[in-house]
Length: 131
Image (cartoon, rainbow, N blue to C red; front, top):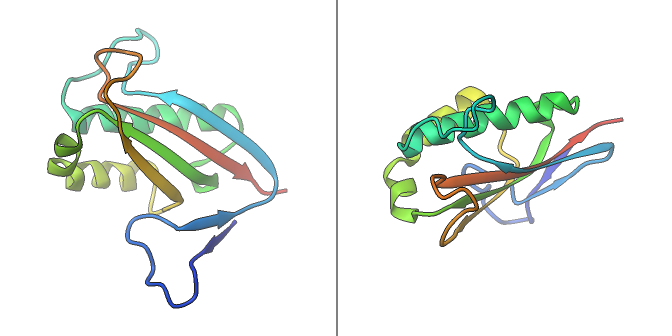
């Protein structure tokens, strides 16, 4: 996997501008902060919801033979920008603890709502397992 940045541009903080990879692709979608066994939201607190979402993402990747280090891009959807910004430090700490100090291409989008009414964030990711 190769992380790229245009010449002369400063390195992006907390994410990569572009990632190139070859190998088996693993696509994930709809990862939210639910208990995967009960299907119930773990907590209404965004920090704990994010933590469970990261754990679920890692488990789904593992089922397909990938690890967090294989992630090349993440799309992150949140329903409340201010809630995210107010909790960014704690969410970032959980990200680094569970995903690692691996910063793929990341996009965050604020949305009006998610399919599960109780969810406040959702992640989809693409990983690439090198040949």
